[in-house]
Length: 140
Image (tube, rainbow, N blue to C red):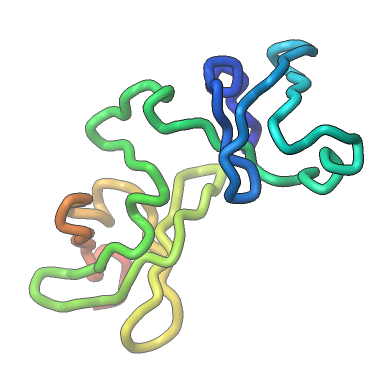
């Protein structure tokens, strides 16, 4: 996933490798920003962070549409088909055609559920429950 330059440009604090760091200086371009972060005074300090995600506060992102979700809000949700518990969401996978929920089933191997209306009946992030249609997935 490519960094969102607009979020990086707007953030005064970024989380890198699990540590919140204040942006002390910005340079470069929007497409290729160069940042100086607290606790990262030398080139060696910067090299140690290479490849780590830069996380901006969620409050800086545009609001999500009704059928959009943050991956971390879906991870750990119970997955059910009606009254039947299927498993727990391990992670969200980004594929070219659509995102997929990787579900660790209570019984059997992993289940991949496409994030499409036919496969997913409902998502209740507050209740931590996702209802799917196993028949549509050929699993009933």
